Length: 91
Image 1 (cartoon, rainbow, N blue to C red):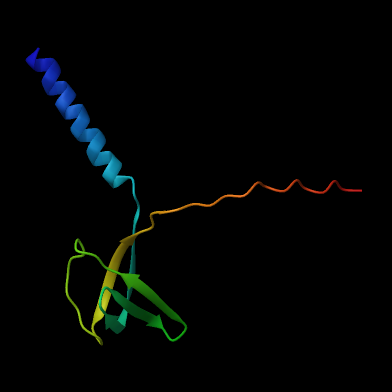
Image 2: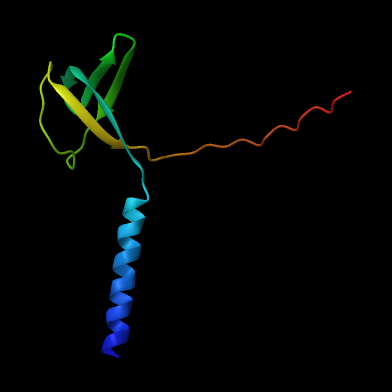
């Protein structure tokens, strides 16, 4: 019985870890241009500036002018779908 419980525990642990690892992590490096409240912007080049929002789980501190590397995940919070339109037949 103990062996079965041990195997089940290990299996659950592996599945939990793999679920967290399944979300791909990205990164963006640049200079902090603005930092107000929970929102900050990072400029990578004169034509590329991104805005980020941080929460209580965000690690690290920075100030305007610092060069930073922001690690983030793209996770959908809401998806609205509409029916696909049928393709027009070719003549």
